[in-house]
Image (cartoon, rainbow, N blue to C red; front, side):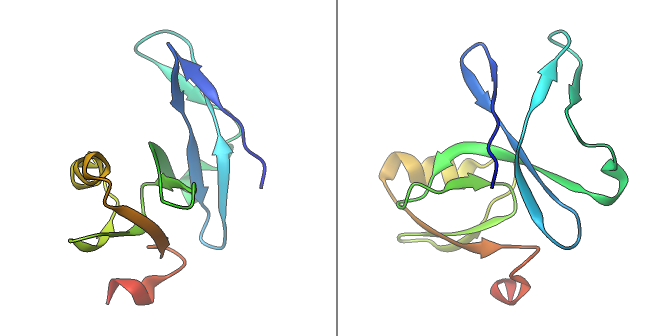
Length: 111
């Protein structure tokens, strides 16, 4: 898996995309100005779902993105959705355990 990063005033901004068969990670954005941006290499965005990196990692060091299903101690399985409030709250408590899968490749985890 190839990783690429972009920086906006020191903040890491990364995306991954689901194209109905596989997830690709490491996509980056290029800021044209503070209000508008373009996404590099997303030529066919109509058939892709773009997910943002939360800036957090699980206990194994794996990056957590929107759409991931993460086990949180004392809470259970959590589906990561923007604005990531439960996830950030759990990170302050040290309760993020591990990514169990994602909503696109592991639909059985949603049942």
